[in-house]
Structure formats: structure tokens, C-alpha cells
Length: 202
Picture: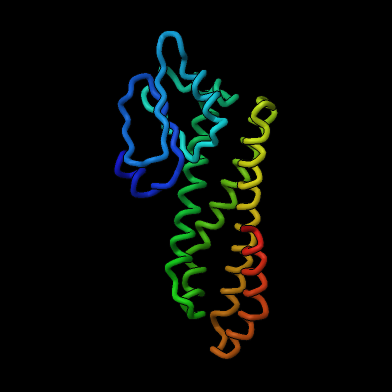
């Protein structure tokens, strides 16, 4: 886990939560919290959610229902929320890597969009799921509203990005059978508009 977190998300803000201090991560921005007889796991996690961690690593604790209480859902719901947040981050990273590594030529971009479709559809789906889960949390913990609202804004923004990416994929599909000169014309007319709309989300 140490090496995986350090290599994949070295700049994330990580909260580590466990009964005994066993997990280690080789990153700079992390906080490690442990439970004891006087302080249950749900107390520190509720406070530290205000710090807006990118990732929460839960080690050995007395039960997921404790963590579930902290985020306002059952243990099972909490596991789903944490899994969805991980999927959300992992898919976003993979999409970004694919797009950043592609050559500028139109044929290379067409091939890249073909490969992205499955990930983009999964990304759109997890954004929708997270919107519902975060809305429930916001209703149960109004004191955390500002932090939750910021996270919801980011998730909803990424849902819009996924929608624009799906439209870009459709344009790329139309470009494939065209001759080079016509590809460029359609790219400038249709694809560039979508790319500009996506850029406005940043």
C-alpha cells in the first residue's frame, strides 16, 4: 500500500484511520489517527472530514459501522462511498493519462477516443452515484455543508466533463471514415467547440 499510494497519487491529502498505527505511506501530505479507549474512531474521522482529504485509508478498526456513523451512513453504505470515491479518482487519472499521452495528429486522437469510451461511461455513472451519496451526507450533517458543497460541485463539474467527452467520442467516430482534409474541417467545426466548452470547466 505504501508504494502504491506514493506512486499513483503522491500529491493527494490522505487521512489514515485505524485502531493501531500499522499503515505507512511515503507521501508528505498525510495525517494518521488512531483510536483508543477514550476516543472512538468515529470522533477523529468526523472532525478530520473538515480537512477535505482526497483519500481516507481505513486500517483495522472495530467495525465499518463505526466509520459509517462518522460519515452519516451505515457501514455498508460507507464502504460503497469509499469505493466509489476511489473509482472516481482512478478513472479520472486513467482518462487524463490517456489524453495527455496522445499525439496531436487527428488519427491518433480518433484512436484515443475509441479507447476512452468505456472509461468515460463508467466515470459518468460514478459521478451520478456520488452525487446521490454526497447529497445524503449533506442532509445528515449540515455543519459540514461548505465542505460537502465543494465536493459536490467538483463531482457535478466532472459529470459535465464526462458528458462533453461522450460528445467528443461521437465526433471522433464520425471523423474516422473521412479524408484527411475533411477530417480537419469537421474537427475545427465540431470537436474544437466541445474542447473549448470542456476547457471552460477548469
